[in-house]
Length: 59
Image 1 (cartoon, helix red, strand yellow):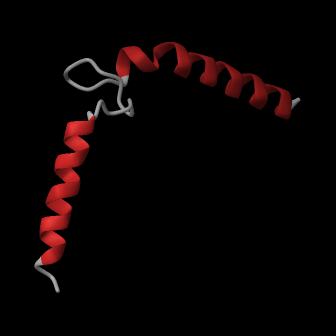
Image 2 (cartoon, one colour; image 1 turned 90 degrees about the vertical axis):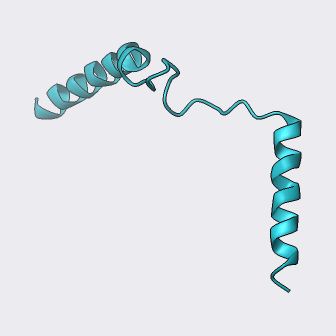
């Protein structure tokens, strides 16, 4: 009987989490925490250039 009660409690907890996660687990701007970053190709190329410039001085 204990395993049945535990499995029901886990199911209720999981369903409650999925329903309420976007309401309470958010950044101050309102975006969900853990959401994918919106990075453009231009931002990636800037990061690559900075990485290359920094690595050339370490020779």
